[in-house]
Image (tube, helix red, strand yellow):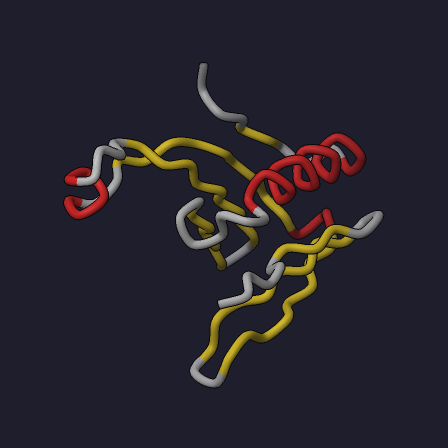
Length: 102
């Protein structure tokens, strides 16, 4: 299965492809609408813990009335690119960023 990109950044705009009943729908958010973006670790489910993985990375985007989360296991191919793009987007547009804890 081909992994498609679901997060795009522009100069002042963030485009997220959100799951709907029939596929994915693009939603555009200007930087003023975004409350904060955070990167963190979450505990894996029981099945992943059985194969030896305890923690996985997660991206959380909080926009007015909407919270979107992207997990590393679902977006393996593009996850690191998402992190770099979102870091640059936050620096450029002064959006609050909570980065991975040390």
